[in-house]
Amino acid sequence: MLTINALEQYYGESHTLWDLSLDVPKGSCLCLMGRNGVGKTTLLKAVMGLIPVRSGSIRFDGEALAFAKPELRAGLGIGYVPQGREIFPLLTVEENLKIGLRAAKRLGIKKIPDHIFDIFPVLKQMLNRRGGDLSGGQQQQLAIGRALVLNPKLLILDEPTEGIQPNIVSEIGDVIIRLNRARGIATPKVNTAAVGEVHQAISMINRDLGVTVLLVEQKLPFARKVADKFCIMDRGRTVATGAMGELTDAMVKRYLTV
Ligand SMILES: Nc1ncnc2c1ncn2[C@@H]1O[C@H](COP(=O)(O)OP(=O)(O)OP(=O)(O)O)[C@@H](O)[C@H]1O
Image (cartoon, rainbow, N blue to C red; front, side, top):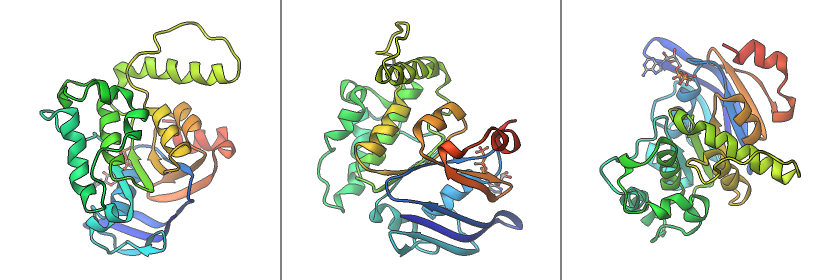
């Protein structure tokens, strides 16, 4: 679905992406991994056309993107949730979602699709609350919900759990409990109605809605749970790629542990 070949990118004189190739197959959830500063965000921005590339190719559904205008990406069905989320704090949840709708009108989408509220029930409950009043995890759900308004075929997420530390315990609890329940393992009772179900939502978007997902995620346990493929970057290059089950401790130690 998304195929990147021999990509070279520079910030001024600084060579950041080197001969980079990556394949994100249709239906997959691929996690881009690597230590800070190896070029993960740069790669996502290059895919979205937010920074220029020097050479190489980026193809989405057969369409050449590397030198195309950024607007083309959304029109072709690529949704993007940048690092830091960028929701509008003074606008309500509904208004934030409607901003996504403005762009979607060109694609013939006239109302906020109901499945967004199935995936993020909390957004329905909080439609009239200001974005800035939501917790970090809820803001992330809003940012992902807004990207889903465009009904993307590919959803790109840059560190969706970054900065939602206060809620992370409940998120971990929730995801683990659901997983254990599915396997018939009893778990101690915790408050599962708690905020933030970002990872579970990503799995639903990928598996139930059939949206292909490319995400950057530093938290290894989550990456393992959510993604079925990985690609590790080191100093602007891809150094290892495969099915998530093939990610070895040696790779983790060499490329991911700080
Ligand atoms: N706008 C910019 N101008 C110049 N250099 C930049 C710019 N943005 C990023 N860089 C540099 O490019 C390199 C890759 O940065 P990038 O943000 O893509 O890495 P990353 O893997 O996403 O890291 P992190 O996990 O910290 O976000 C770093 O050395 C960074 O300092």
